[in-house]
Amino acid sequence: MPTFLRNISFAVITAATCLGGQAREASDFFIEAPSEVIPLLTKSARMDMLDYFRSSLDTPTSNSLRGRSRITAMTPSSMDISISDNTTLQLVVQPTGKADTLIMVIETVRTPIADSGIRIYDRSWQEVPTKLPGYMDFVAKDKRKEAKKLPAPLMVFTQIEYQPESGVYVFTDRSREYYYKDEVPEVVSFFVPEVRKRFSRYQFVDSK
Image (cartoon, rainbow, N blue to C red; front, top):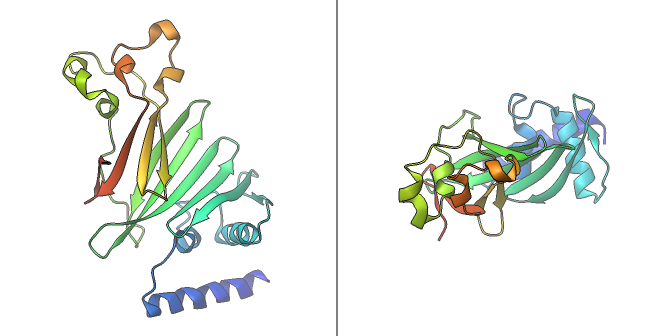
C-alpha cells in the first residue's frame, strides 16, 4: 500500500477508535509517538515494521542510523522492538486505575552489560515523573539493616522487562557482571537476582 494511502487509513482508524471509545493498543501509541520519544524511527518506518510483523515477516527496517530495526513481540498492552544489535525498546500501555492510561517506554542498552531505563508519558506525551526502584530494593530483606551501614556501590546495572501475561515489571540485577570477582562491593553481595514490581498509583510497588 502506498505510504500516503496508509497514512490516510491510519488516521481514519484512529479517529474511529477514539469515537467508538475502544481501548487503544500498544501499536497505536507506537505509531503516534513523537520523534523525541522514538527518535531513530520515522512514522513511516514504524508503519513498515508493523506491516512486516503482522505479515509474519522477519524483514528488518532501516533506522536513521542505518541500523536494522524490527518488532519482535506484540500484545495489545505491549511491544518489544529491536532497535539495533545492542538496543531494545519495550513499549507498555499501563492503566492507572483512574480511567487513564500511561505509556511506559523501557530502553535497554548492552554496552556490553545490559542496563535499562524507563520513561513514562501520559496520553499527551508529557513525561510523568516517578521513582524507580533503587539498589536497596535488591538487598535481601534480612540484610537491609546491615546494608544501610555500607557504602553505596559506585555502579549499578539493572535490566528491566515487562511481562504482559502477569502485568509485572521484572528488575534484574546485572551489577555483578561489571565487577571483577574479588572487587564486588560488599553491599552488592547482598543483592537478590531480581525484584518483581507492579505499577500502582504512579509508583512501583512489590508484586505479591
